[in-house]
Length: 67
Image (cartoon, rainbow, N blue to C red; front, side, top):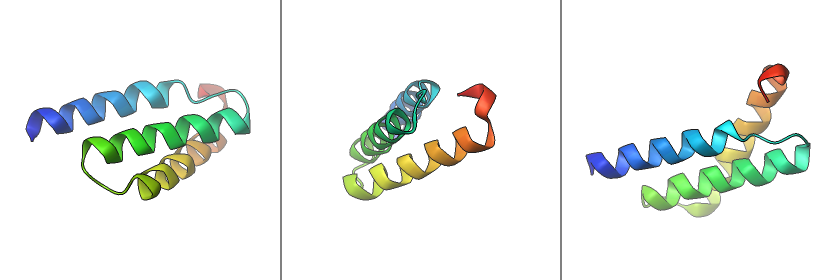
């Protein structure tokens, strides 16, 4: 379980690093990162995707120069 959590965290960091230039790209990347994390942790893919989208949009809105 520990390795699975580490892989999930590493994958999410990699996907979050590519947060997108447009709102559409941010939605796609956030959904992908959230769904990937949920799949690795045996969670709900839809919930993971929704959380990923929200997190990516909020992060890029709060830190526009980092996206």
